[in-house]
Image 1 (cartoon, rainbow, N blue to C red):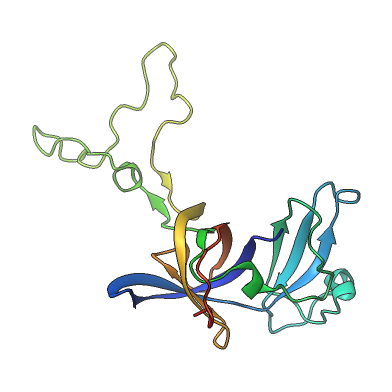
Image 2 (cartoon, rainbow, N blue to C red):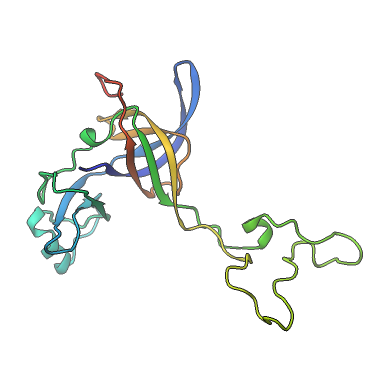
Length: 219
């Protein structure tokens, strides 16, 4: 059973659902072609690899050899992998992922993407520390972390201490969003609320609960 599709983040907007204004994120649907079928006998697990999007340059020879069974002669922008729980999929290399059969309006989904990188950040911005006092002569300690370790025993900074460092650029999953609409002509999906990542970022949609509402136009 396939319960995932890949999209790219476009921009945020708003729409009205039953008279209420709802913030939405517009996600674009790039071309997704099955490039490889992974089996338990050969690879140790069941999965489908898909070639997503297209780059404006030719593939190198090793990649062309890998994509030959799927008859893909261009260089994909990304490769994605969808783990299968069973061998129920009838897809084969070269087939297009049936997105409209996997996801529909009203489904509950989890959206996984890479968060915005914020560079090197201090403890106040990164962890919400209060900082030091602004008085009593401490003119240079207003944003300092304070004591970070103990004395002779153990005489070192313990692992996991919240300190300044790189912030953002990590994998984040936003749960329990709703699919508001699907536009097959524009290849766009509208989901409720914000999703992690920057514009053009590849994000993964995982269907967690199918909708019981039947939609004729699916938008």
